[in-house]
Length: 615
Image 1 (cartoon, rainbow, N blue to C red):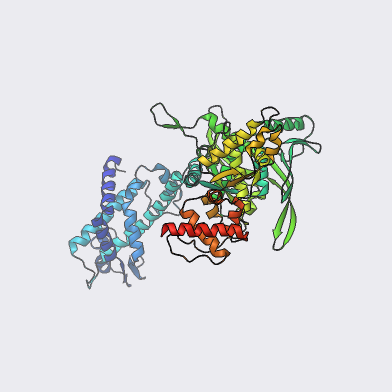
Image 2 (cartoon, rainbow, N blue to C red):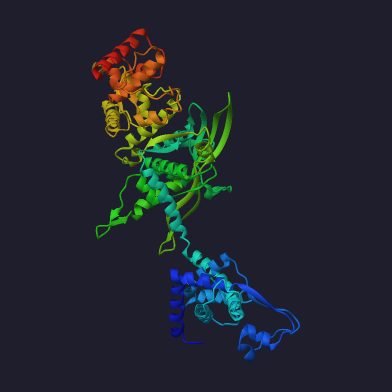
């Protein structure tokens, strides 16, 4: 075998030429010219052999029977020739490729290397043979229209075609090896999948989450740590009952085998410890996971991937700066907080009876399900041998997944800002946004967004405590939270419906205040997104600048009122206050429902006045 330093330039230069446009052109033309076959009929004489092989027949006479027809040459297809040209352009991949060489030599029974003992010598011979053929064809002036083919060149073409077939097989092995070596690391691939979903969600002001009663019940139970003791179970239990569900939510171990004695006490203690660790952070995490799953999933059996870093991004946290002033990433403590939260969420177990409508009939289903099922997790190994978890492969429990992608799916729009509010200082705002997003999805069917809430309902859902002394602090905290939501454009506006602050001068006024009504108007995006769900008018809104005739019926009043109000950039609350109407009344007018003659007259007068002002 020649010294490798002598072989390398020849192979590299040849591969470079075969990759060039001129080289490809010459190769295709040459391979096409030697694509042919001739037959030498018996008896095989020396004259006949010399006509095919030239004078080499004298020195190395072919070992062929003299009484059988000898076939010389090979007819190739255009596809074969193009694949050979591509293979020759990759001839240099055979250099210094010991791993490939070992595999190829190990398959000598399948791949014919003509008894060569290395890929370099095989590549060298192939480069020389191809170049010689190119020179011979070009020097002879052989054309495709020649009446007499050159048998010796056909024989060279036949030998070359056999070697090129071998080269194609070897490069197919090399490509498969390179593909396996270049396959993205599982960590990298999972991080990429999660990042794509997160980038899509970060562009949105509202995130898709479950709107089922079970999901909202879980949020409330987790955020406010409503788990308590149950005589039937040693584990923390919360009994829940809403309009369509009734049952319990528990913190239970993941292991399924029965345990007794000290082991049971250990598990019981660990679940009660988890109960103390629960917070609004856990709800942020499951909201982020739910939104990510909806973006990635194609069926209720689909799994999704999310990383701890992407949960932190969705929560609005910025990566820390490195010493050079560049982004250095999140801290170990931040990531561990998310990892621990996911592990805690895995312990949430539902035993719920749910009323399900099927056609015109209702049926009660009993469901046992985990809140979330984590099937895989991975990351990097630490020096101590433990795993630094970076990503999770998961799916929602069947209690949620079965309704998130189906035709009658139960999904709501949650303001992304809810996840960004501070867990400690803005927990009240978080809880109000979650509760309102759930309520707006429920009310979308009847378009009763402005139906007022009792103050005590909002206080309860927000987790605001009403102290025995200075009870007005609860009132102030709720008002502060509602003002914050309005400032951040998460609600369009809010106001009391039937409260007079003169009542606050009376002793024990807080009891009356807790029963007062508060109307909260959702942002326009919520109304517009749910418009196809509700029993609303499915006609395009009329432009304010169009000259429209006075409305003749409830439908036309509704269309013109909504169009004019939006054109003037007024919320329903603002317009209702200007016209001295209640917000629910204006909502009924815009939904084409019946109201009193006096209320209708106020709207008609306002429409007439605003039309005159714009003409």
